[in-house]
Image (cartoon, rainbow, N blue to C red; front, side, top):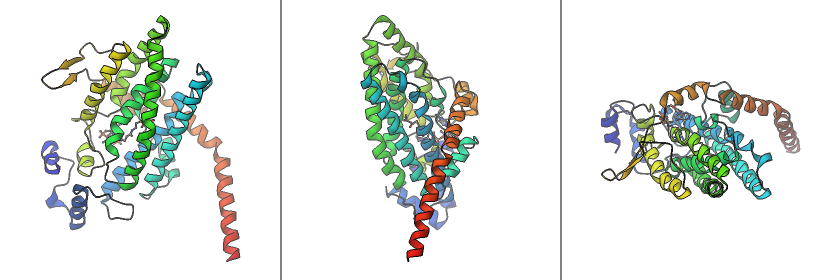
Length: 330
Ligand code: 3HC
């Protein structure tokens, strides 16, 4: 598998003969399926790639609270409100597990948050799209959490111990999120003609941005080859995108909704659906900060961080006071 990656990409992965003895030993451990733990020796590139990926993932969980948080006060029933509230709180918890996992690699949460606010770290493109109607909350749960699970289930087997353990917990909760989204879509799709129209409209707007969540096509992916050799990633972006389409199309059919892709067709020979690629120019524009909500999202996060400064200062002062008292008593 490792040798295959070198061959298929031709770049990005260090050849075994160019590795130092430590790197070779490290690669052997990864290939044997051993978990790498924080105090183990690791190549600097492995550490940096993990900080980038886990940090980006943590930021996505936190920024991802915004589009759904937008609907907590407007949920149609008390039950829907309680479910949505629980889901949004879960996302905050996921962000915290992931920040903790990244911190074991020698970066602080403050440094990661500063990098996010200064545009040096990314978060998932999907959260730069608006949630315009209640049906969008259904589509986000069904498609966005559905895509997130597709990507994250294999990451439970990732080589870095703290990341892998965080993913096991997160995946359990994500699966509830996906089901609550699908449940909203079922209600809407079987509701009044207007509710049905809203459900179809939400699918129309969220389909391609959900496909973009898996990252650029394999030909354009910068990090996949090395990340897969290190088992930081288990599948390529295109593999997961295809799996997501194959799983989601029958779900849309069950809802009686139409996937907005005139080229979507089951291909017997491949045993998969053929489908249209998303608009990659739009994807890269969103990554450059030019999506519909990029500016709002960052403003909201920076404001929350600044408004919360007094809480962090108070907690740190309290911890310092406790420490000083303990030292004085010793
Ligand atoms: N949004 C933003 N940036 C993206 C992206 C996306 N959907 N897909 C790729 N990119 C960026 C990469 O970060 C990279 O940029 P960088 O070099 O500046 O960091 C560039 O595009 C090239 O992409 P690659 O394919 O080379 O990047 P990766 O190998 O890192 O693959 C990934 C991208 C598949 C997203 C991978 O990082 C990954 O699996 N990450 C972990 C999962 C994750 O972050 N999920 C967030 C989803 S949202 C979520 O979980 C919240 C839930 O509540 C719904």
